[in-house]
Image 1 (cartoon, helix red, strand yellow):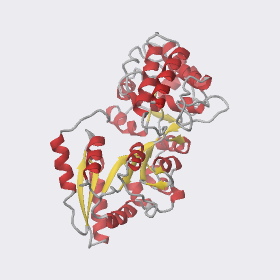
Image 2 (cartoon, one colour):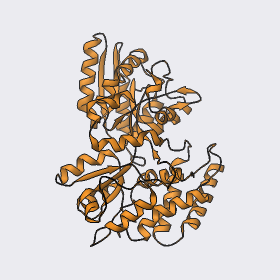
Image 3 (cartoon, helix red, strand yellow):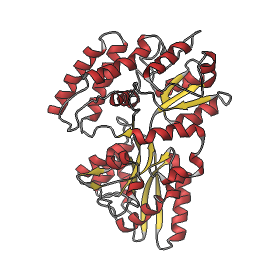
Length: 403
């Protein structure tokens, strides 16, 4: 969503609307994809709290980061906003949101990575309610046709590469990687491979670039070898996550990395496709990993009605309500016990959640992601080998960290 713009007049009008709250009213900015569920929760809360009115303002993804930042900086913000986890620490660093340690219920019941996203300087500035992690979807019929057991998908990197090789036949590719399009698609799929092999992109203290370490380079080589070995489509250099999903639906690829959010569109497009899901394979003797994504509630520093807003957030984050509201998985472990999350297809994605980690917290993350992505592109295009590409990326990242 970064890079999308919204007209200044629209932002100002939106912020003005947010500032029109009155006593007993909570202004809630909530994305349009959950509107129907949000309306039900708002009605249920008002029924239980007749002295409080929930005024919903429905947001869209187009220009949302800038819209929220403008509202937070304007002094005319709403009372509750739904934001992506990685945005929270930036708001906290800029003193734009309120600490919420007195709001959270059963903190130990929450996914630790999502809590870490929302924590700054020892205080909690957001309450996570939605989390997600990338795994691998695969075509069961392709597994069977290649002599593989679809009930026992690959667990190690060697098994994963071997399965891709066996299913690359007759114009079909065994495994589609992302090599183009939206930068984040490639980072959320590659970074976990680097982590599970013992590497990282930057050091834990945020001061040193380490993406050219042997562990990181080996992971990058493994990722790009799917294309070098011709197991990933010819269009890999241009393909993002949506393109890979379309190729999968069209029967052109047998496996690709994605989240559970792709299951519904795949089934809608091709209901007879026999679909499997697995945790992202790991190096032999090591554990899998994933980048935790998702959404949190924040209360702006200039919220007009923070007390009632906190009461509303506590209502939204009961186990039942959080489980009802999320589009993907809830941040609370107890919510995962609800019937809707017992679908066997979701189990593999849920199994990834404890292995999820937050992306590095640095103000340069967008530029750092671009440097790694550019390095991957140079490898896929044959301009550099993995070591040279990551050496160059490392220099670019270190320059950013030193700036």
